[in-house]
Image (cartoon, rainbow, N blue to C red; front, side, top):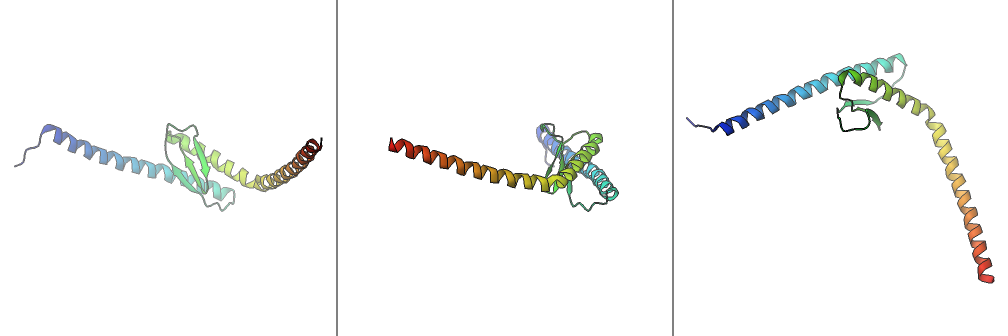
Length: 137
């Protein structure tokens, strides 16, 4: 029979508990994400939308944001499981509104770019004219 020291025995127990904690955490995350996905699907259906977004719950206390839309994912950082649904609704509505105003943003950005190019050309023309005047005097 092999004898283990108390510290070795404690390490084995801690690793075992850590593994159990990770499984519990994964199960909890899956449960919360199932709730979030069910709410997402409910809202998607009510609004007659066909949004294809991935819902990810990554609870973090070190984030200034409670949630955000990144590409085609809604990421919820809120730690409190009860609050996650509210954050999901907020981020989903924000996404929908942003999609509705996107054509106006695109058009505005094109207009701003054109105005900036025109202003730059005028400025360069003036700088060149003033430079030539100074060279002649």
